[in-house]
Image (cartoon, rainbow, N blue to C red; front, side, top):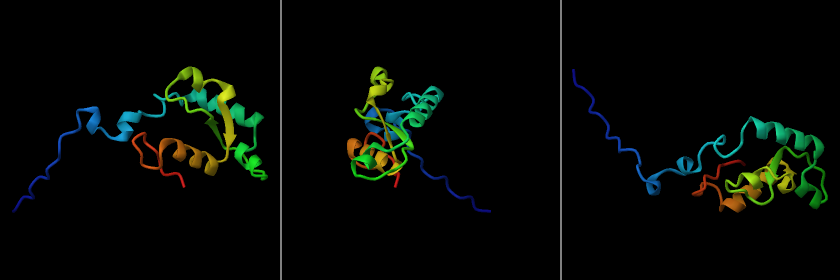
Length: 114
């Protein structure tokens, strides 16, 4: 009986130049989004339940995500600075993040959120 030939599988990237955005970005835990962050963000949203951007537009929208006003880019002091946090609804957070990262599917690992 004939045997199907094996498929060619290119070698895994070995240099940062050839690595995928996900590999460069790291996982959420390595970026600081740990259980401690989950608890802190829940507490922040309990105290700040409205979306800041919705309020600026004259609407009332529930904040579902805690956003870093100034992107921390791995700076853990800035990451945990509560004065750098704001509550946003999912659409506003997605729009802001996509704008900061240069759009979806970018080198920093932007994700499809809409």
